[in-house]
Image (cartoon, rainbow, N blue to C red):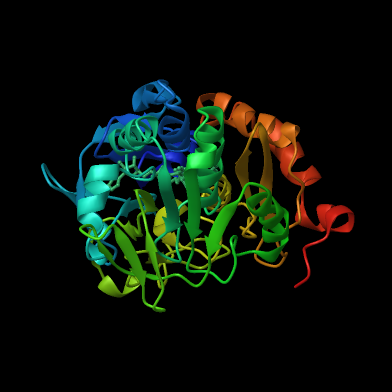
Length: 397
Ligand SMILES: Cc1cc2nc3c(=O)[nH]c(=O)nc-3n(C[C@H](O)[C@H](O)[C@H](O)COP(=O)(O)OP(=O)(O)OC[C@H]3O[C@@H](n4cnc5c(N)ncnc54)[C@H](O)[C@@H]3O)c2cc1C
């Protein structure tokens, strides 16, 4: 049988895993990205809060298996009806099968005042330079109020806003500035962490470390002159150092039909087979897809593996499994483990869990090539939410 042309847009976590996983005897694989550098985004956290000098960036080509053609171009338009992908330069690309894995970008234009404080204080969701800005501000901080918060209900890596405040609190403690520093965490959700199971694990830690939590806080505007953040609910918080997780938005690519995307520019898909709504030959995976689960690398990984199997004609279904590592500071951590049908587990905070988080980062580059697939298969089976629920429960709800 003649080989089909598989076009993958986006060579981040999801796109790279898919390109490497797919059977090359069935597909000619072309992977397009506007950048030829692959960034391990979870490292932003450690650049911002621990001053890590290791930026964790690799050449994309060094991460690809034989048989994948990498093209460095920016995609401007995806025509799903015509099966054509247009780039800002050169001829359009045709395909038999398409996978969109373009992730999300930060959209600070949504919040009045955000532009000014984002460029002054940085953030740890956008890029390495922004994360380095956070570190330089934290490093020169001498005391006052540090406010960290989630500015939008959707968030890349849902534990990351709280990870930020836990690591900032640990940093001030280590620098001898804890008594001179007040910590405030705000969130649009009714509690510190949206899922009850993990919230019950996290709340005692926030209390123990003297971190004030402002729930139901949806940012309305920021007044940089008054150093105050206001919520639509009528609350406000004053800051000396604000570190705000920016709202994520799908990439600025034109689609035909436009109706395949929601207001956040995320692509509508079937949550089980990841096919773009109304199309049998096109899929979307990872952060840029409107899938009702966490926007995490683990999800992008599992979605890529599901789509690879479907494209190879095998039976496969994504069950929404999430497994987000969560650094709670002072050398300990937990994981946010759940799925579409299973509530998040009340998973304990241990030193071993943080070790696992760092181990996963260490083997990231090799895992993109599938070198740890058998280990991950065992890990995901042993940590299935249904198994863990018996031992740890899912909280009071
Ligand atoms: C602070 C932080 C901590 C995190 N911690 C964790 C963690 O511990 N565990 C975890 O699993 N996840 C974590 N994540 C989340 C994880 O990094 C993302 O969920 C993951 O990278 C998503 O993969 P993706 O393939 O969907 O998108 P990305 O990896 O973002 O890749 C998208 C790619 O598409 C390309 N692209 C975009 N637009 C275009 C275009 N128009 N033309 C061509 N190419 C384009 C981009 O250049 C990019 O290479 C964290 C994220 C942050 C910010």
